[in-house]
Image 1 (cartoon, rainbow, N blue to C red):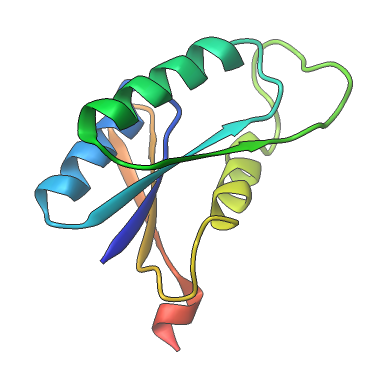
Image 2: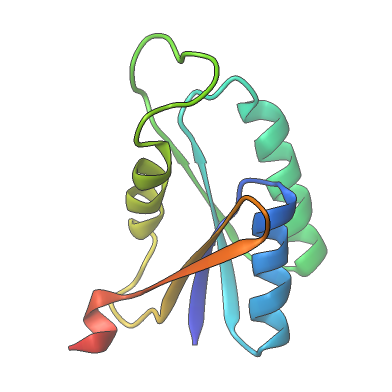
Length: 114
């Protein structure tokens, strides 16, 4: 089953990659550059993790507000999920992301349930 992991380059998303690979999923990474202050470091880390696990990595770049505020960005995770969904094929099985404290959230593709 194909699984898209929203890969930020951090420990949570790295654990998602490792978990789904160990369970036999065909894992593909998706990185979203939305102009975040750490975008270059995050992309570098996401590329390194994808290379380590030998998975493909799709990169989406978004041009948004002219200035990203420091700290919490309202709706950021929802935006990232929708951006990563652009990489889902109709026959894809899962999209996964890690959010803090190794909480793993999995969203099943709508098309796979119909």
